[in-house]
Image (cartoon, rainbow, N blue to C red; front, side, top):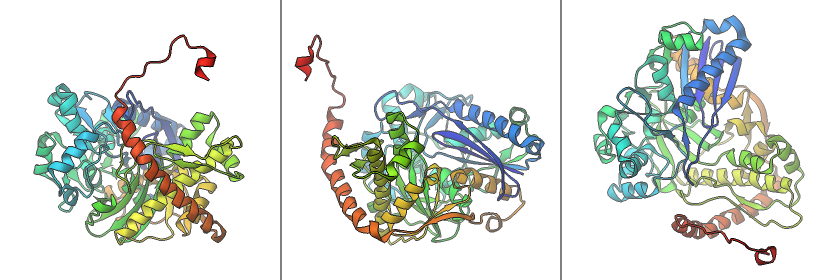
Length: 504
């Protein structure tokens, strides 16, 4: 039995497998994200561990005594979080997440100071990455950075709780903008430019390595035997790729969680900063990846459901019969591929008196698919092709979403069995490899296809025209977003003592 733990943005997922393949049970515990200021995104690091303990308790309750037969633990997690710990390994502030945009100026300063940085890091500096956030802390919270002894990501903080060691994998390290990605080693120059020291960073390992052994204290909290090997694991998309069998050159998957990615495994380091692609190390030895990264994957669907006060499933049913969906920009937290634009925001165009919430949800679904069309175009511009991708993540549950993706991308897309649990499954597989029970090629097999979605030729012309309008919408909105960002720090004084006639 092997336990996979995925520290997501919206939830922590735990998964038990028998042999790295068959799922015996799973549990999910929601997480809370705070936004104390516009563009900020934070989580309490302690909530990650609390959710892991709660998830294991739920899983233990559902599978019974078999839970105690676990032979290894693997980890996956959201990338780019900046979590500062003091010398006693206690968090000094909330973790600043991947979708936090406060470090816009610091990112631009890094770009100006080091124009060739993307050829080392695999991606241009953007505010979601770790290094710009550290520069932001140096400028705005210097006392916190001065007291910082250690810097960890999400899954690595959980690893610290599990075995007491500070370790990370090559994939997660790639997303910090502190790694020489081709050499798979920390870059002294980049570390110095970020205003930190090498001693603050965790030890580098491959995701299939054993990071440490489960301590007796952690074992007691989780209901597991002490001493179990804990695999180092990796960033969520790369570990999800292991869960999907994407471990060889040219294999690909499409991830549709809170964020979205098209991930292509590569046998070498292939930076393509002009296309705003991420060229990172894979979480497995000797492999890298080229990835189109979208900050807004399935999150806009959940956002609209929250605004409408109606379950996502209900809105998707209504969207299936929508007759005139408005255009929608899904950029709730800016966008990476292909725009590299932290200031752009979401919006509808084309609303009228006849617009229904089903029409609006259909517009959101289409916009997510059009974002993936932009991502695919960026990959093609970098001479990277893919076809018939496996789709993983919570968004893969929607037939409408997957059919729209197939129609827009013009290729067959597949829903794998257990697609929503991709990263947790991949983490369990890494645990099996780390424990020495199987080799990577043996365990990282593609899942069975639960359903395939063929592109509908009749929809091609419709979506081609809508995609042109979608792109024009972005070009029109961008200068407005830039202007709005420049005035956002101003104050707003409401009109007091106004009558209804004054307002309308």
